[in-house]
Length: 432
Image 1 (tube, one colour):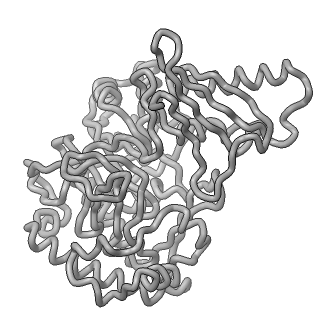
Image 2 (cartoon, rainbow, N blue to C red; image 1 turned 180 degrees about the vertical axis):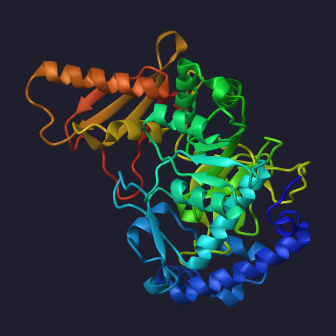
Image 3 (tube, rainbow, N blue to C red; image 1 turned 60 degrees about the vertical axis):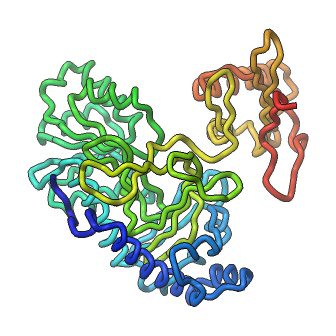
């Protein structure tokens, strides 16, 4: 069994907790002294860093959410002078201001070691040729994985995205043995490989896939089509980027690196979940210099796995991620997330920013889903035929994503209720 940092990866739980406590105290002190947002948050709670005497005290620390990053755009959460920040990444910002994260030189080194740890854990060596087929740029998946590949000594092939046939030619010509991309792109690559009839020309053995949820069925399909072992990867830009948690060769849960992150799983009321009980992942960074985050709500749903791992690593494992912590609906046995609906609607210029999902149980006791959608300014031309076309397009696009038919009701801008707090996007009449 290979390790990148064996002393840390196999550290006794008691020693790991001691390390976490020391790093947590340092992180909270730096955030309190250098980030006005956290100073005020802790002041409002009547806390100072001196109140932090054990890991259990972390539960009293202030929470951080994505909106806080947007409210402090672009550099308001930095804990170091801008002159010490050597890189920034940012989200796409499709729903408002992007979220910006910064890195010191030490942060880049820490991140690279973390990803190198992941690569070695799935069996990569210096003999491997590793193709990184994701976007480079503001997206953390490109440079984050790239630096980790170089750190552990494999040959990095920064192919980026697009031009699928050329990607496959590179795989063959360069003798690529390991691949990183999204699972959906991996499936498209695999289909193209089969169409080209070149699967026997590939030397692939390892696939690392992340950035979006994917099923065990997709894993089996990829492994069979490409003759590889497919590993699940988890990361988020707010906590460095890719590499936060990764499967080992057991392919049974993702090791999350507790020397870098304090891990909580909480229910909808914010209470800690027991091992095996699903909830939202909340993370506190322990080693980030430029932008430490305290009790950050990731929005991702998972649960902690209790059993020790045969691979010998002692960091806790998380079950493969189950979705987002949005208001999930189960309609006719299918999970429906508001974020899915929002993603589809936001791509349409004719659609405004507000929608509301209504679920009811009507004919024959079957669930029905209706979605009220506000149109944007100027979207209504006065022609009923144009409305019908738009309605049909929205219904079709949503069905392709949700895998269930919904009834769309187009309404004028301003028709749906506004609130000062979180908008009520779900009305479930089945509970009434």
